[in-house]
Image 1 (cartoon, rainbow, N blue to C red):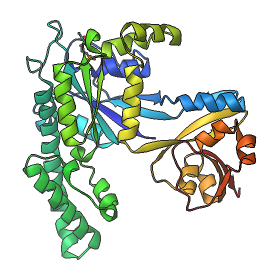
Image 2 (image 1 turned 180 degrees about the horizontal axis):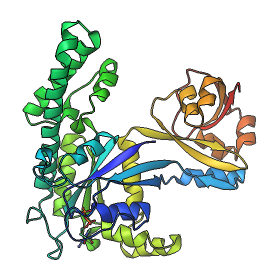
Image 3 (image 1 turned 180 degrees about the vertical axis):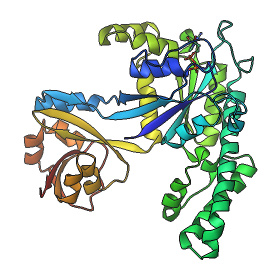
Length: 364
Ligand code: GDP
């Protein structure tokens, strides 16, 4: 599955947010740095109102949302790449995620220590980004050194790798993250294999005070501006509110949100923003037993989409009966959509669209 790493300086609200996301007390929030020592991993349902609609029409007994994994990664402080704080341990954790949710403290609270002694989300963002850039430069140097022998042997892959490493290094040396490098489709695989930390897409999460959750504040506005400049994602959230909401049942939560002037839980926005950032989309399988959502990358072809359900579906793939979500709804189900001529039979080269309701036929 897809994984998002939650990073940020100590005491910005990472654990609070993670707790709210996973509704567990596993990641204990506490008012001192380095509280979360092991990376905490939690699976979160991706909210999608379409799924309930489909289940309602088909009379599905069970609704199974698709999931995304969040990892609470502690230990990033100034000097982390040099072994400060939890040292280099966090680097490995970040390498393993597909995208980064970077939590920035945009709230004032004299009772909560700020490691740098002041609230300034833009500098905080820079502190973290700098550590990640230093770590990338070091790993590039190591990789370059390892390539020397292969390059002498004329290894084609090594030549391509060296070219990409040099491009990344050039960006980093001018103070830009690796994600600023434009990578061609042909180079994409080799580039991903470099596993550079600053190549991962970033979603800035502004943690604001409770009474500013709906409006945001001056700090979050600055972060929004920075995110736009970098082509990064951005959400405003109050981790404390989300933590409270996560303990309420659905009706209570809706009332509470109303009182706060919010029309939707921040976590739902966060999860969806992460989903978009990762370039993910959803398709559905719908029947009387269950209505289920599945996650694939945009551009995935039908057989590979089927593989998410089971490897055999890909191997023995014959065709996919396909109904677009809107057609399924207006036809009031599969039979109606079929009668209206909206059920398409798609083959191996079909690029699955967001919201497709699919039925795979395959050789067992
Ligand atoms: P982490 O070190 O980034 O994981 O931060 P925590 O989630 O452990 O939060 C550190 C402290 O800040 C805890 O005492 C939280 O209750 C508090 N905190 C988190 N979010 C907010 C917020 O939005 N407002 C205020 N006032 N305190 C918060």
